[in-house]
View (cartoon, rainbow, N blue to C red):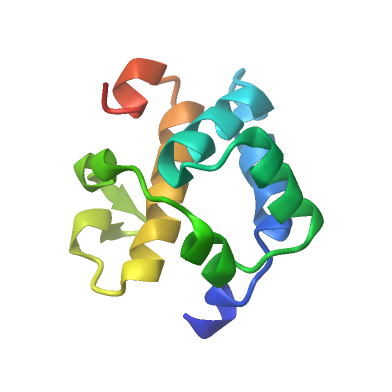
Length: 113
């Protein structure tokens, strides 16, 4: 897990964008779910990506959405709601949101509106 925690978000973010674009969605959709989850503005996200902020520091600075606990389901064979490590759970929350975008789910459902 330490390797993931120390990984720059900027290394994974383009993979998120590629994944959703292959399914007909956009970078703007990835940015929207990231803003919703983290509480960051777009400028803050862009600054973190430019600074090669690690996942550890990225989520330490985030103001996690209070509805993030409503994110459920399986990612990488593990139920996100059952992940014990808080940082890993936040990373997997983001993974799950991106997966939902890629699957074409309606944004209001993704954002637990």
